Amino acid sequence: MSESTTTNPPVDGATPPSGSVGLVEPQTAAIDTPLLLDCGRRIEEYELVYETYGELNERADNAVLICHALSGDHHAAGRHRPEDRKPGWWDTAIGPGKPIDTDRFFVVCVNNLGGCKGSTGPLSTNPETGRPYGPDFPILTVRDWVNSQHALMRKLGISRWAAVTGGSLGGMQVMQWTISYPEAVAHAVVIAAAPKLSAQNIAFNEVARQAIITDPDFHDGRYAEHGVIPRRGLMLARMLGHITYLSDDAMRAKFGRELRSGKVQYGFDVEFQVESYLRYQGTSFVDRFDANTYLLMTKALDYFDPAAEADDDLATALAPATARFLVVSFTSDWRFSPVRSKEIVRALLATGKSVSYAEVEAHQGHDAFLMPIPYYHEVLRGYFDNIARRMTEEAAAEEGAA
Amino acid sequence: MNRPDWDIVTGWIGEGARVLDLGCGDGALLRHLIAERSVRGVGMEVDDERVARGVAADLNIIQADLDDGIRDWFGAHSFDYVLVSQTIQAIRHPERLLGEMLDIASEGIVTFPNMGYWRNRWQLGVQGMMPTTKALPNPWYNTPNIHLCTLRDFESLCDGLGIEILDRAVVDQNRRSSPLLRALPNWFGEHAIYRIRKRVV
Image (tube, rainbow over all chains, first blue to last red; front, side, top):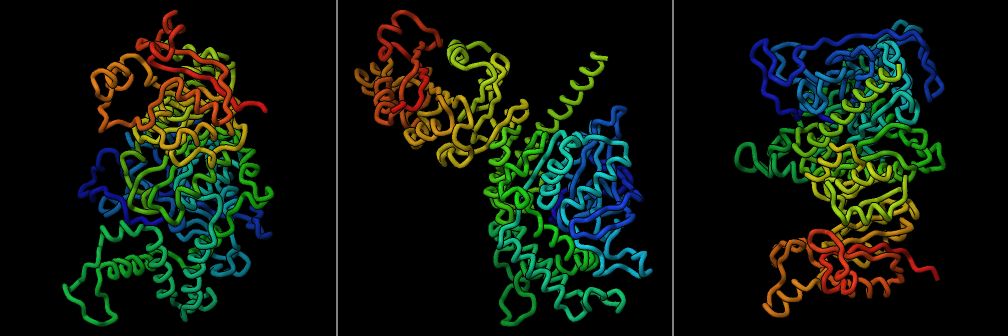
């Protein structure tokens, strides 16, 4: 969920490091097919901002959709400017020669509807009022997102994704894709995800939301009209989030109980390094993320529960899926623990789906899915190699038949 | 790769069967069964490197530790056959695993190194040392094999667990059978291959 975790060194010239997709530019798709939302409201037209890496081949069968997590966006790989300190949030996995190899695949990553990085969302102008939507932007679900991404897919001239891939909330979108549009997904890669949030997960989200909503600068979500932003609330929400994305071990390894000034001060200023880190993460988040979007995204997480519509039976819910699945979890991830991934695998096995499951030993907690852990990337690479091989075989078979 | 014990296992498995291979390694036997019998196969393996190789070979591999039990993963009667090939001797609770596997499949196929093989008896009985052979290559202090047994041990356990033995084959170290092996299997069989199911009461 965080983007603080890539290990690529900063580039100091215009030459991208090898394995990088290089400089990328976001694009905008205007979609005029109305979107009927789960909440009952309609969006007549909307824009989605997205990035692509690699080339769509002639058969348009090499497209891979990357779904982002809670605070993510469309910038998954490469850099916007040569001087950018950090590349996109999943640059370790996407690029020439990387597990999701852009020499073979056409990779698409979309900023979700309701986002604050250019896609239509709370910061956009409400055509009915001429003012920013703010809190009036409709509540969205994972299914709404998938429907909007489906519209983009058609616009890009793609009828089936070679793979839909995502971690965390992104993994939930992957699952929903296989349920809503089974024919449009050949392979589904579900990483560090869960079939629904636990009560504990929802509780964390609620504390985060309350931090934002009760900030005196929130103004019922109309903070923009008051020329302020609910800084403290958003910062607290992010700090809380960060604690849950890391593991106890990762925090100990990173900070221990190290003091900033070497001795305790007996006060409430920053004393421990971990406090300093959290405050930094919190404040920098305020500058790049919108509070109303954060509320929307956490609600979408809370609502996701495909089994709810199938008598609480996940296997029944996933029954329509025809994709081949890869499910990956990380041992120290307590936000979406391996037990939760196992529920997904079990449901897939129960209906005879094709599924592989890797449980990656990692100490980084939930954030591990963004890290270039060798075993994790080896599994991803092997899986995507198979996808490429199958694409070639299908193309050859069709040519043979023609 | 052609191995006679694989041929025996393959001969027991029906065309298009649903097969679970416990401790599947990199999935070589599963691949063989998919090629020869068009089975729908799932492998279970704990080792990272082997899981990665299995996934790269386009197999369905579930990473899990068999010592944690397998009942959580699969519903009753999920498979036609469960294989435990050269793995049961490394399991903490083989008796529990045997029970669980016959809950989720109609039949089980178990292969293991026979501790009653004459070379093992010779090394232990005459030389007074834990055997090391081609089938049991590891020294006693560094071996994954914690529950070695003989054919008679295995058969007696099955009997106690209410498990019926449908077929038994034994092979030598070159994984071949012979009249001598068939006459005195617990002496001359280096590897045992059993087909089992729950006894019908």
